Image (cartoon, rainbow, N blue to C red; front, side, top):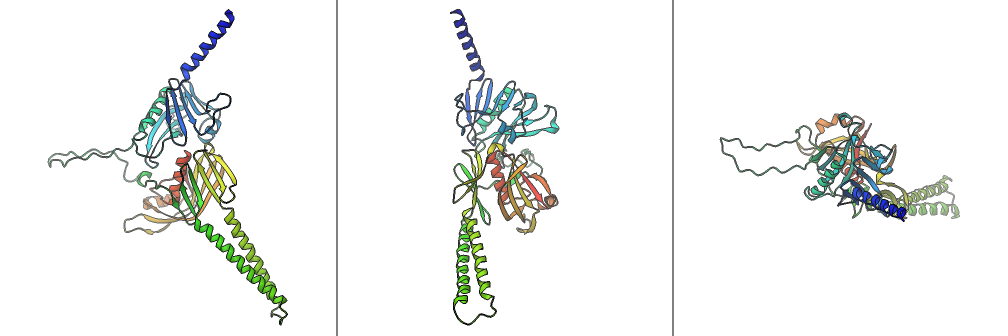
Length: 418
């Protein structure tokens, strides 16, 4: 009896000890079905779209922070610059950062990682969560609370990037007094990408469109491309039938021989070639593929529009970054005397999965503008990879790549080809 009572007491003590260190007092909702759970001794980032574990009945955490460090899921580590062993000591976190991103119009929370907190030259960004687009004040409280709780738990510095505040309206000063308000701003020579805000979809191209649905962002062929391929296929079939009838009819008509004698055979050959081209156009139409960024399922998939079959799928956590590849921009002339330079380039969009790249779309020629052409043209003509800056190059393709990066919670890079 005493031994049984001792076991019960020990079990109750263990349960109370676990509850006292891991119970949740606050739950914060973030974008893309993510939830942040906060307790006195725990901070968890949970994917609300995933089903609970059959063993524990709880939803597995993408990231879990305790005073002794961070643990995280392997897929989360592969998508971000995190050690593969699934654990990171607090000393590996230089600081916790939460800030308002004007180019995305949303709050973002992440970590600056380093080999040591003093190693400022090797800092790497690791995004954790973001909040939906909207006014800065809408989600500011949740973002700051989540960041403060994480910084307190890991005992690391917290850095807050506040949204720009509008300058106050000041009455005209007296002539003898200098009461101009002090304004702190970035140097005019290097404006940020926020100088060109993101445009909301749909973003249209010659044969593609990037559209936003309720829980999905979709690259899809435009209707005129589908209809054009259908009409081309039908027209080629009609021509093939005409040439086949002419060729066969000439051979079987019983009239005078055609001179030269190989003309009927040529007509039949042209009919076969036209039929093959028609079948190719029809095949392109029925196998056209939409690329869907599914926020609810947190995956990217290439889906056949007409058959519904999935060619490939990629979880959000496995996307390393969005890569927009283009040729060097070609100047097309300015919009007005002092307006931005109009440019044109050939563009491809890929998703990086580690060392592997999946092509999303080949857009062909895309026109845009450069607001810093005089300063940026030399650099943009050089091949290499750099971050997308809308102040340097702004086109529907660059806008779409930044939207994709925001949805995937990944970086967006520009790669200029020769």
